[in-house]
Image (cartoon, rainbow, N blue to C red; front, side, top):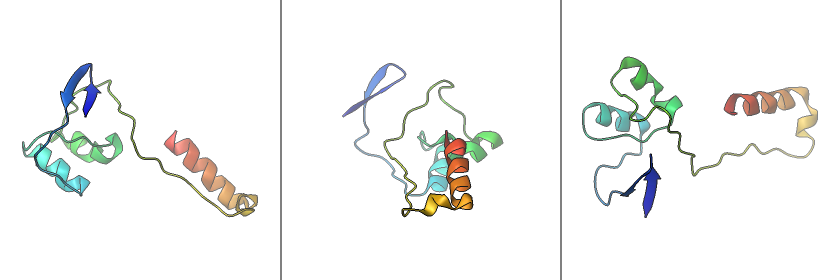
Amino acid sequence: MKYPVCGLHWPAPSEGSQFNDIGLMCDAASAGMGVALVRLKLGRPWLEQGTLVRLFDNIVAPSPHAHYLCWRTGTMDRWECSAFADWLRKTLA
């Protein structure tokens, strides 16, 4: 499968390191082991420290994952639940 990145079409890697921990992945990338594809919010500490740099300033890739806030019928009648849902929606927009 090929993924367009900045107008380039490179094949997905067929081998290499894989991490199930964002911190370990960012530490590995900052140690020169490769490139980390990470959400900006999660990689921010390494970016602020200068141990990682963004390859492209204007590129934002949509996530293939979705998150949902679910509730029982009537839950949003409570002001605190409705306020939380509104806050979450605005924060993640």
